[in-house]
Length: 468
Image 1: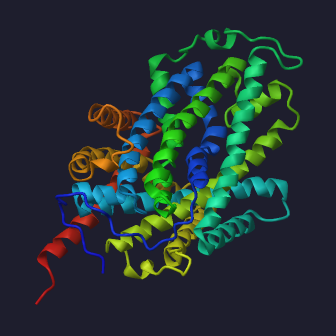
Image 2 (image 1 turned 45 degrees about the horizontal axis):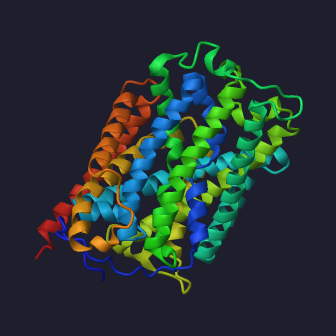
Image 3 (image 1 turned 45 degrees about the vertical axis):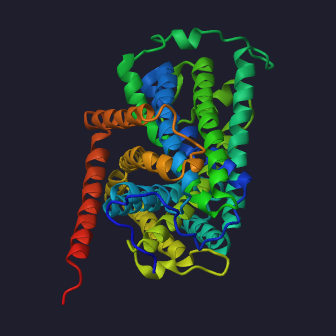
């Protein structure tokens, strides 16, 4: 049995070796870092942010991206020093106690398995549009089975799936940026230089004032979720510390470039108020510059993005619950590992709840599932806050006990970490006063309090010890 960590670990020693496979390569992690957050939220959901903030959505993405970069740098510092399949859940436990690791792990697991339903249903709707004769639920079942088999077979299969999925998404964005830039300068056939007309006209760069920037940030910040899976996957690479260090370094800057660059192209080429609600701004841009079949091209990219996210979330949720089981915070039966180093029971547990979420989404999308979705709406920010607090505490221990492992130090420590915490607090306050975001915050707070109560009950029972 693995030795239980004390409530307040005094040192930062080595974590026990993981019994999982170590077959992920550097290329897998790098592309996972790049593609992990490039999803439907960017390709389709960014239109809502533009409608709220106008051209100033560029500032909204910058603010949200900087916050995400600070959190990922803090997480990368700990992951490079102490790679673990439970990632931030393990670090929260070592820094703050078992209650923190328990809470972070279970909240994140719940977030992933609920979002699985959104991704599977979204991909099924697109596939049903292509092949109407096949019911939507059949597509959902097919996707869930395919990716369950992929995750059960070997971790390298997950890595290969994600590598090629991410490569397609990254390639699509790079091509979009190239075409968009050429169109801005009038280099493409039948295009003229657009200048600054769309940036300064139609109400100016800040048509909704600074309030629009803030509202836009609330609309887009959760699109940066997903980078955390890189640090979970790093524990199964051939060189965890080096791999996570490289992946985090390359991912945060390039993703910020892709996101902000895309917004610059979109709002420069098109009047921000010309975009139709629900329409992908990427499709609108491609149509405007005369790319044939733009709608179907983006449908394919969004389809791949959804399947990629489904695959990554199934992987991340199975490793998180496996790590919880390792620390005796989930059923021990989930610890069984295949000969190839795959925690198959943990995969089954995650996909089983994922299937339940899918059924709820198909049957009651506006009632039961909506409550579940609201319950995880702000969980990402809670997890990010635990990451930042954990890094504040563990940094001193790493410097004292193993300074040679501080290969990816947090920028401007501790000021940048405190700045990230202040930013997250500000976002939570803004959510409280935003009519559309308030339900998510309240339901997520309720879910977090429930998990904290469960953690508290567990600790009380352990302190009392077994009855005589």
